[in-house]
Structures are given as C-alpha cells and as structure tokens.
Image (cartoon, rainbow, N blue to C red; front, side, top):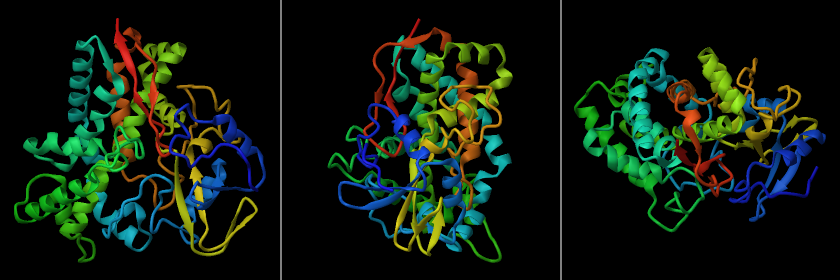
Length: 396
C-alpha cells in the first residue's frame, strides 16, 4: 500500500520533530507501506513493533549487505564493516570481538565513566549557560570510547575532533563530507589501521591488544579488521548516548512529575534509562535487503526489494506499549527496540550505552531541578538520528 504524506527519506524530515501522528496512521493500515525517496529508490516501510522484530530476526530472507543505510551519505569503502556483514562473516566478527564488550570489561569502565560525566557536568555548570548537546552529550560517548579503545592521550583531541564530524549524518554543521569537506571517516580509518599495526608489534593492556590476541578455533582478526572495527565503533558507538542524553534531559525538563519521582526514588534509574531509550529512540531506522522471497504482515516481498525498519515508530506501538505517547519512568515491561529488534545484528555495545546513560542520569539528578531552557532546542538535519544538536540551558 502506498501512502501519500511525509517524505521520511528527506534529510530534513525530522527537523520539526518526529511525525508520530503520521507513524500512528501507518501502523493502523494493513500490510507494509510502499515508499520512495527523491532519487526514485523504493522501499517497504515496517512501522509496527512485531513487523520490525520479524524482519530483524529473519537473517535468511533479509541481508545487511551491502549496506543498512538509506538516504543519508553512504561510505564508499572496500573495507568490511561489521554492521554491513551477514553470516558467516558477521558471526565470526562478533565472536572474535565479544571480549571487548564482555560484562566484566564494561563494568570495569564504570569508574572512568563516572569521572568523565562528573568532569563534563562540572565544567558545563561553571559556565552558567551552556549547550547540553555540545558540552556534555556529544563529548561523553567519545571520551568513554577513547578510554575503551585505548586512544593515547596525546592523540585524543585529534581523534575526537574527527569523530565529532561523523554524527548527525547529512547535517552540514557536523557532517564534513555533506558540507563538501574532507571525509573524516577515512582519516579515522587510516589512523586506526596504523594504530592496530603498531599494537601488533607493541602489545599493551587495551582493546587493540585484546582483539589481536583473540582466537577462535585457530582463527584471529587481522590488523586491518581491527582497525576497521575500531573506526566503526567510535563513529557509530556514540549515537545512542549522544541522542539519549540530550533527548532524555529535554524529556525530564518537560515532565517535571517524572523528574520529581526519579529524584524521590533513585531506584527507578534502571527503568528510567529504558524509558529514555524508548522515548528518544536515538537511531530512527535501518534497512535490510531482501535476498529470498518472503512475506511480512501479509505483504509478499521479492528478492532485490528493501525494507526499512522504523524503530522510532515501533517504540510507540499501541499493541505493545500502554499509553505509548506518555513518558513514564516506571514503565515495565519495556520492550523497546532502540538496540534493534533482536536477531544477529542486535547492537553489540548496548551494555556500554546503557551504563553511560544510567550513570549520567544518576549524576545529573540533583542538577536537573536547577536547569532551565535558555533558548529553543535545535534539531539536526538528518533522518537517521533523533538528534537535538543544540540544547541551550541555564543553571539557576
């Protein structure tokens, strides 16, 4: 079924906010929705929770290769990026990189995350007026990932400057290539490829050395694969935390009763973290490429067709969430799909993203009542992330 209306593939589709009413209309209609972008590329839209889960978990009919991206700028690269691989290559990469995200290793980052959050919050509050997105939400995940990856202190500022230009894909203020500038992804890739080769010769107690030492049935990752993995991690691994911190603060400031409840009972931090992730849904969508004939929601889909999974719609599905348009930090259960709909491609770094967000919320609880908007929030010009790129605040 083809539905006229908003062009969800336009880079500026969400600059005025997510069109939740439009998604509600799509969910209410039978089957999947047929759509096309300005270049004439056609898609099937999966907007219901159950349909997104179906597509996510059916790795035989739906492929992530050659890309899961849609209208935002695509990378022209011959390198094998884990998010664009299928089994058995994807399975192999996940098995050999698992140790970098093992629960014990993530938990060991807890003290570093608390330190980073504390420093960022203190520095921002000292200004009196600050941009939460720029001053806190954006540097937080990059600083944490710098710690995880083991970027040397002398290189940290340079790497983070490059990485900053990879968020908000399509927005000229951030995306250097979209603005006609250099491709910073390639600069990061060159850096991490060289660093992986260096660590192969000079092992240390960091992620590169851990991955270089990883073995499975005699197999190991090459220095090239580790360099590509690190580049993907620092460019894609920031998105969830960046969007959820700024979006979560905005939600709590707009829902004073929920903020008061969280301050009265910090034991709600876990459920509040899940609700922020559902409410914001940092990554709005990913696509899959059909490789064998199948059916979803009664719709026949043939090889060569693409299906877009709209997580931002699935996370407001009335069939799964009671009063889905209500921000409720006590919501349980909370079957949000902000890390994917299950299956082999569920976000490998979800444990780290949850820890970052929960640590931030806990550290900011006593500060939030003193914060007020000092200007109009500005959304990014991208249809890929639910991003508030500027959130001006004043500390009373």
